[in-house]
Length: 155
Image (cartoon, rainbow, N blue to C red; front, side):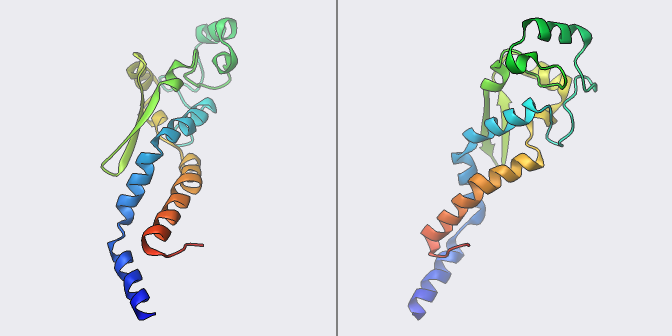
């Protein structure tokens, strides 16, 4: 029994929580754009504030008419700024993880224009999205990793 206790202590001492967490985020980075797309579709930025265009929380009258005439689905929504017309911006989002941080960008050629109009905060997860990621992805994976590598179980 004492040997088992020593083995668990040794395993726990070598368990690198930070590295495990970064690995989990890296392995699940493909889920972050979906969370971000849901947030943007709701018209919210990383501070849970309305997405703006040059500081305005609404589209211009021209854009409203255009979206109502041409847009389909989320592309026709005009009661909030979604930065969505055809879906290419959302569909081309990808997340990279580096130096204990993640960054989501979109590969569309007009990405820089979107950031200029709405600010980089729109590409950040708000608190509720971060909590959703933590509760559904990070915590279950860290529990499993801790159990596998140390034998300890978090309940």
